[in-house]
Amino acid sequence: MPGADIEFHPVVAALYDRVQWYFERVQAPEHREYLAAGLDGRVLEIGVGTGAMLPYYEAGTDVHGVEPDPAMWRRARETAADSDVDVRLVSARGESLPYEDDAFDYVVECGVFCSVPSMEPMLAEVERVLRDDGEFRFLDHVRSDGLIGRSQDALTPLWRRIGGNCHLNRRVRPLVEASDRLTLAEFDRPTIGYWPIREFARGTATLCD
Image (tube, rainbow, N blue to C red; front, side, top):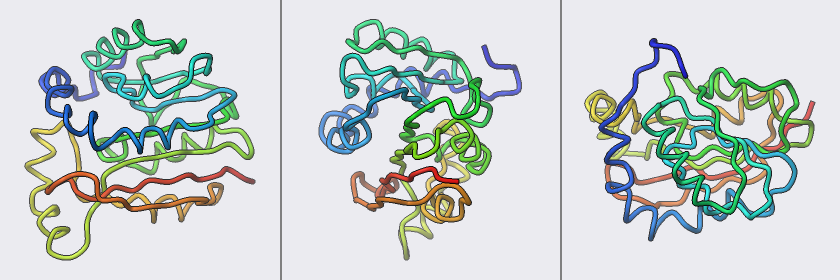
């Protein structure tokens, strides 16, 4: 299990599925389907959470998943036990992945960039474990423009404390575009949720040297 330096949020884990019920049943399916579409080879999901992505992977897909929070990890194991996908779960962080270089054909991230202490180390790990021509697929809520964005900036310090370090005002596209090894192949910015979580970044980036 992860070390004691990681901050865990057992209340968030216990309430997550109930709080996210509408999002997962109504708003998220088409976007999770995007993340899982056509996957073959070896797949890594960073931040499995309670296992919300697992029903979207096709049976037979070689899925590996990491999750640092013990309460989330236990719930993900229960979800995996009821899944048709053979998922190998590891208790680890996205910023320090326990895999060799060039280990995966795909890396999937959904709702993780918002809560890691810093996005850059996790993206560096994505680049390290992806094989050449491998794909990084992501879906995460991001800062909106204008007044809504400024309100997210103001609310984020409190939101982080009650929401498992979730930041309302992060920007994903500039981070991916700044990468020396990832090339953004697809990008969309759909409005999925409601204030204060409203706009999302959804896309695919390809690894090339």
